[in-house]
Image (tube, rainbow, N blue to C red; front, side, top):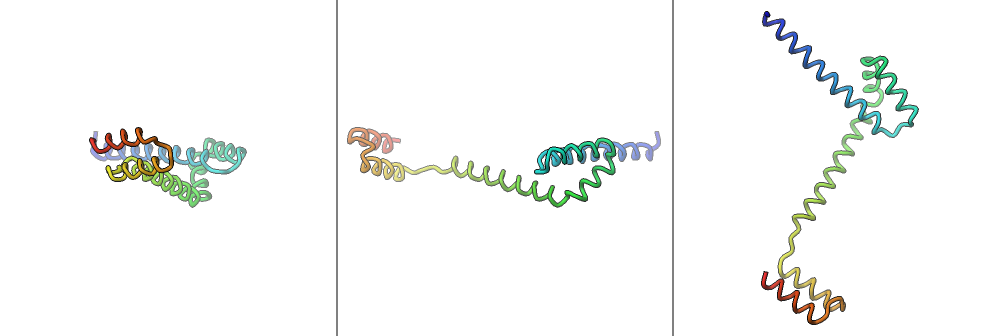
Length: 125
């Protein structure tokens, strides 16, 4: 098998993979968009019946909104991850725990015995 045939086969294979990836991306965006059900059905039918033309038209018409949806998804995911990391990483020192115990005791949420027991746990830890 000549080297050019191998290179051509590799090019065709990778173009096919890119095409499949592009189709999946367009279908995902169609179903995540805020267009009506009939609009989604129309886009799906167009992409299935005329795949190349349908995908190109969809990218031309909705390319900017695809990017905006992806950026919004990314920022919301990033914010949720940052909040989770902050909540997990926020460790309180013994002084913070004693201060919280004192506030609970002053508010009447803890009795004197409970306060002393919790205070000893914090100090012994």
